[in-house]
Length: 326
Ligand code: SF4
Image (cartoon, rainbow, N blue to C red):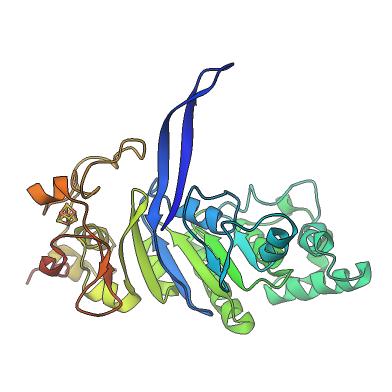
């Protein structure tokens, strides 16, 4: 039941809180060790805030973040610092996440120096090893970020995140700032590293086709809440939430014959403001299936048909898979 609400203030000298941005508004999920949970949704749905809250860049407003039965939400001081060593993040924009004034070698070495994982010679050796692990040449250690392409920079960011042997990695849209041609390379790299180091991923993306490639399970977010959570193949074959169905109907199919016959669901209107969330089901202002009950009562997020397939919709059983017209 994790919540991250940001206060909205007014006034310069005497600041007063005039509302809250409910970026994450009571979400629950779990990730098995060694697995990948894909978190998808439109921009503004709160998925990046979840990633940042989990690694405690933000202190959550309420709820728990259980990591090996330890609650990261209430951990502070040296204990939090040591826990942070086990959770790392790869950021969206490799052009902004690497400090241009430092060489690649010092950027990768920095976390190891902060956590004092070895002598200067051992750290240098580890930098070389990490560059090789992510498919870059050891001599790149003396170069600066501006000398590299976007894909290479993201490899460097991954090497930096792995330098202190984390167990859990939040990958926040790690390929969306990259050219389409290099996306597959970085995705494949992340998957290879997951197998090699037995990593657990929370993979945040707005792109359903990217998430399908990497995730074991997928959670679909809308306006600070999870609308649906299921095994990847089941979610694609039999979505139970109208929002998931609409998102899936927008994923291009690389076959013109099938694409032409496909029924698309166009959602009306924009994402409502997270300051003023609609009553009842928060998706009702855009849902093609909305009825009176949807405006009044918030649907529970519950398992459907006794399986590990959760959806927050009063009419989940009536949602049919996306149609390809004959
Ligand atoms: Fe649509 Fe109602 Fe289901 Fe919400 S509860 S998704 S408004 S049908």
